[in-house]
Image 1 (tube, rainbow, N blue to C red):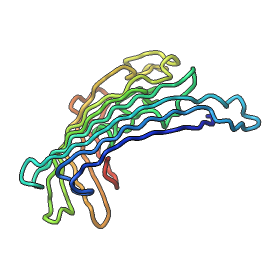
Image 2: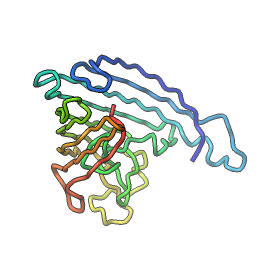
Image 3: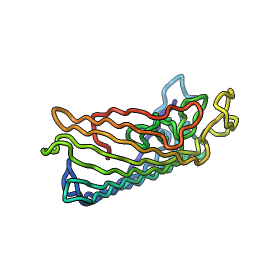
Image 4: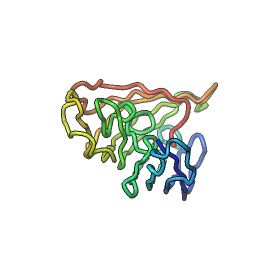
Length: 227
């Protein structure tokens, strides 16, 4: 816990052919954030003040191109790289760390599964890189329903709390920290996109390298399109 103030900068470019059904073009974005302890002090909890300070940098880009006609088959490539660093021995809030796995990162895995975990729970990474490759095709002539086939892959590693836990490769060991080093995981799958009467996406992701204790696949539901 703690109070902090932050300043963020962003630079981006948007060159897509269509806001909902792009088949050509690209977009990219780079954002940074600097956070420092706030000047506001809450009486009685001074011990929790001045505990948060960090810097983060994120870059991502998407590129589209048609493979068959203009819309019969469209290729989408997406990449994401992120870095976060605590400053002066202070902390990074849990939500500001990277949690890789899930419908917006690497499908076929649950939230935070590809990254540092303590007793099965994600605790967040300070470094990440992941990619998504999609083949998009219309199911209905009006483009109201589309299908995709995808490949996802990436990793999250380097929790800022690594010195608090015992390194382990066995998830049954109490106190063990898992996946704190770079460990690339990937998946393949397919999905459906529905535009009306409301935006809905459903993805079935299958792990290429399932490990002991993991499910072979995950199903993801959402009501928005990823960036």
